[in-house]
Figure 1 (cartoon, rainbow, N blue to C red):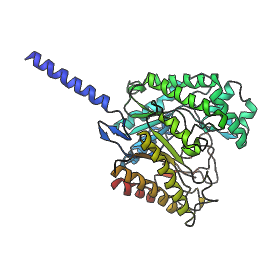
Figure 2 (figure 1 turned 120 degrees about the vertical axis):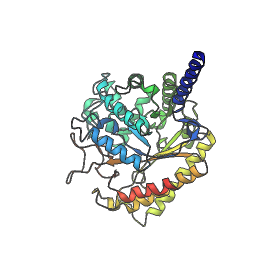
Figure 3 (figure 1 turned 90 degrees about the vertical axis):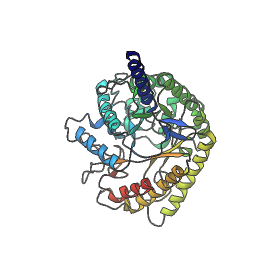
Figure 4 (figure 1 turned 180 degrees about the horizontal axis):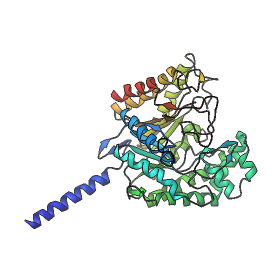
Length: 428
């Protein structure tokens, strides 16, 4: 009898162990799967989520986080894209950057800062939500590549702080991929993050099922054509390095697609063909890309929707060729009339979102390659401060990063018509 009980216990233990292992999000062909079942999702960008629990005011911190996760879950959103690595402090490229930073000083990592992400991941796990964690940034608002270049003597302090013109920004940022010391520093921060143990759950990050994927950076671009070879090498080396440490999680690059790969379809396909890259990403920014002038209108929206569909379909075709999933992981549109006030309408945004969700819903129905979409960005219970355009230290975090007008692209919990649009396509 004892042997039977022992055998039964071992079987249960083995089954539980396997169930825990299979709870990770995996890629199977051009689909994501969880426990073997297809995983198609509508998600949100929640880049500041790992910073909320660090707030001294628990109402603005942990309580806000719990409330917002409950709200998102109630709306059917179960995937969140979140910032992990932030570098440096003070002005950069003429703007205030996100703070507090994981690496405020060169190679000084503050493990206390990861407690905010620890708390977030535990709360997400309770709600069966999954996180995509981006590890650095092509852009200045969280330090990113420009900060690594500064720390390693490629950009002086004065230049780092002042507003760069577009050509200067491209020239400087492209040097990251040929700066061996910069890439080494990036990898040290990466290793620090991967080796962290959650202070609440006791799990190492590499063993945390609530993490869906590691993303090399937010929108890493070669920036200049002559940086492409070094850019490709950095992607390959970094992805392989993550896979050598973490066997459980997916890895992706974080690209915008054609618009972020020197407008080169072959380059986009090549970097995502790498065996250590598990899925493709694209971002869509009609305003930044000049698809409309000044503000979205009823007259220019049809062309914007047409361009968006063409952009998505072309990338989906490449995803099918590579037999990997595709995620539309950033897309946004200003409120009607380019307003920032949360009380203003979002009729055009809702229509725009609806057309993207429709493509995703059709893919889900037909087991297609468009596996997920994360709108930009969830502003939650925060609200812009009247008469103040940009974020200042001490303000509540919102969906819009510090360098952008607060209220520009944020989707607040009060945007009922937008949430109704989300619900429409989730129910389908």
